[in-house]
Image (cartoon, rainbow, N blue to C red; front, top):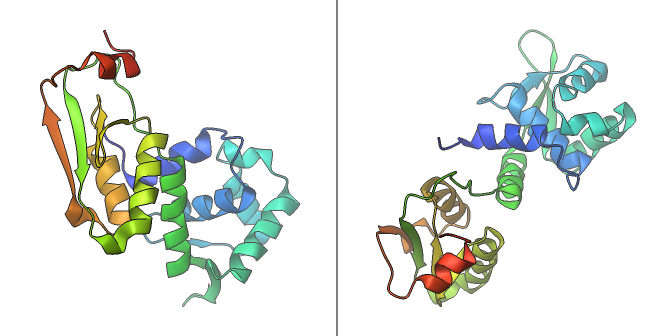
Length: 200
């Protein structure tokens, strides 16, 4: 089953990822507190800390760390405090904050492996205009980080379904129109590729 954006954020928070920074965790928690509107009521900071405790990764941080993270997010204009029609204070994730969330999602994204390979190859191909030189390098790095096998200069192979993840990444970099995903039954001289993925 392919995961939605909000589900991937929740998986990240429940994974206990040791490299996660408190500001990253704080922003993800705020996003999940009331998806999809990305707003949650915080009449007092103590209430916010309690919300954080429902996620495994958040339990690694002390209350004062969470408070400092909230202040940092506000200073960086990733969140804003506003009053609603009921006279309560709400914390809203800004446009800049939503963009940062997508960056976190890209950073911690993994393409799930199947228990049993279906015998098909996923071929990711792209032909980016010269103005996307920097994006080309970032896309190449991300595909390598995800475990893809470099088949040709701008063609990468993976043995498991990855359409949602690749589309999300391509859209994030603004090159969705230049990326294609093919599913092929076989590849000539695929022994080296099978060996790369430890497939029999």
